[in-house]
Length: 345
Image 1 (cartoon, one colour):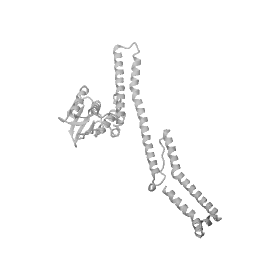
Image 2 (cartoon, one colour):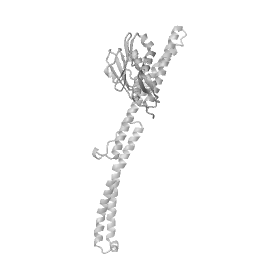
Image 3 (cartoon, helix red, strand yellow):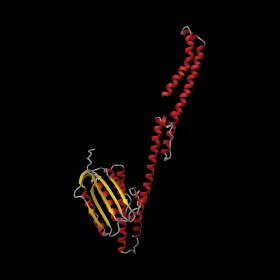
Image 4 (cartoon, helix red, strand yellow):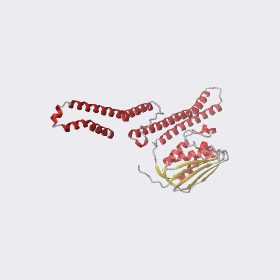
């Protein structure tokens, strides 16, 4: 706008020069009006007005209409599912204006939408894959039950397999819904003070049949009392997942340790096992949704537990990390603050 005003003033001065010069030599304004030069002066002014109008229209097209048209076309491409759209800046970095900033924000938005769409596609693909396995088991054994020659023992075996597959399917659906709520932070947070040491002990005792069945040497080194302000139900999901994984991936007569100690105005909980461990390339992805680095146990999980655990710990203002070496076991470490204040909001 400032450039347009300056240009108008410039043309006004240039266009007014002949009139000013002629009027200064005239005796009065009546002589100026009846003079034959008035028509020429008006024509001169019209020409300069036309030049200014053309110049202003060109500037408007170049600086506003054309960029807005590019933005409109880009938005239309994105609306049709094309996330490769990129709008280059109109000016160099030293002369950025609001349209350049708008283009930058648009490019950032498209990039984020493209990432979200990719995640959505991967999520749907992974969910479909995870659903196929238990459904195939259910369908296969259900069809086999139609065979009248099956013995009672075989029928019971097939029914147990169907029930197990159904439970896995139900667990998968439940975990997907939980994770979706956590990702969107729609899961209601029920902050309350409770004894974390007692919760850890209870979770370990609930899994006692699992580690006794494999004759695992389970050791717990817990604090006598550890009050903490957090969502008790959500943290229980974390401990159950970490302990279940440790027991699952530890061979018979192996060792699992649950260690709790105070650290940095908080509490550190470590779950250590003597299981198969993981390579560094696997550890980098262990908290991703549906990722299962050890395929021999893929039928006993759905790759959502650690993703949920990380989100829950993050919402609890804590941290979770993992250390591992192949055939030397794994150590999951969770740190939680113990002195955070309750926010009434």
